[in-house]
Image (cartoon, helix red, strand yellow):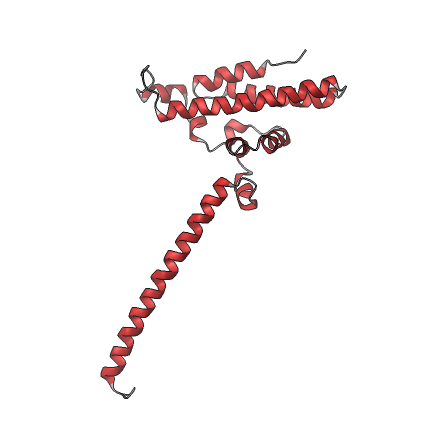
Length: 188
């Protein structure tokens, strides 16, 4: 076979195109699998630097992710480190952006026999917040009993601040009621 033959060049060109297409598909599948696995790893590993970098602007989401993954110490550390950030205003979590009126307009609120996935998410979030604030409260009590009133006050202030934000937010009633309880929390 001569390479100068136009017919042979056409066949080589067609074969090359097929191989090139197959190579591109293979690379695409490998890249998809890699990035899909990386995304799953990021959601499962909240200590991953890429995860933390993407979550820095959403401290509430980050803390709740840490709680979901059982890393309560890191969650409390992040909870305490976020200063005066308004967690409710800066969150991307949809359950915190839905107002009570919006929720009522969905028409699923009055089902007493079956909770909707959204209602289950509300309950899960309230449970996580209560779980975390109980541990923060316990740490405040321990700090106060050891004579470290500054640390105890910092813990209580963080709980009160989150409570105030929940209470004053335009979100569903269960979050506002949780906020009312947390806003006025004190230790003896």
